[in-house]
Length: 359
Ligand code: AHR
Image (cartoon, rainbow, N blue to C red):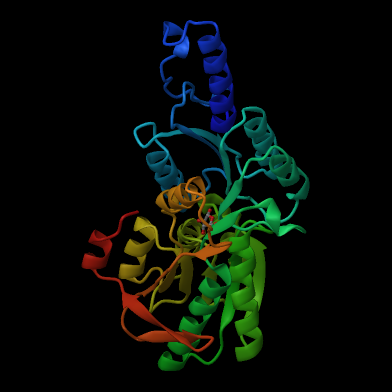
């Protein structure tokens, strides 16, 4: 239940009790712990527990697992939170239902990692009417009224896509690769991560004269990445680059390429580009199976908590808070990439880089 409401109810109860001459009795109630996604949602007796309803996308990728862990670790009972976690299994309608449940449960904050960008106006208006601040995390919402969410914290996907493509351009130039025939395995269509990374590739293809020979969604999953790559390889025998919009798709694509009797890597038939840099992804980058991997950092728990702390203190928060992200590659052929006049250093993946990885 919302803390402000509880505080008001408690104050009223106290005044009534005092008036009845029984102030200080046993009826004040002790602080309650957390409820397991239950409907009571939280605190009483002036407790500082903050209830957060988190509408998570699903569990489609290693990145998502790391993201969920970060949120659960941060919004723990020990840290003064009650987290009501909802896994939407990649379905927007499930997220809408979850948000309506959070509103009914009178949570203090709603945190939304939206499956897709559009379709949120109605339910976010309901949250606003209920006076519950909504923080969007990881992916953005495209709403007609910006006051429907307080803040966005997450990656800048347009920038990620542009960095990856500038790396590919520089690498192809350095290696004398004249023709790029690209298989493009997209993420979930309509998700910010898909929109930005796809935009990066389509812009670069137009500018540099690359051929996107095939384009299909891999839904950010390994199984679908493999299935899509298998079918693309059957239809096109000239693919020399695959641009996967996350690491799990890349793992599936690599399996499909190998199963088709082709090779990946700097001296192989096909260069694999990816996004995320999860542990297994960065390891594959060290071996060259993934030639370039652009970071998408999933550790958003502490970032969202910082926003909540500021809101609790009545402070202003940034409407959009992009996270700093790096670009990682096999070898040292490209030292830096430049996007919109800014240089981004490319990190060669070494064992030390892998050992220092937090996810
Ligand atoms: O929105 C972030 C993307 O979603 C990550 O790249 C991907 O792995 C996840 O499923």
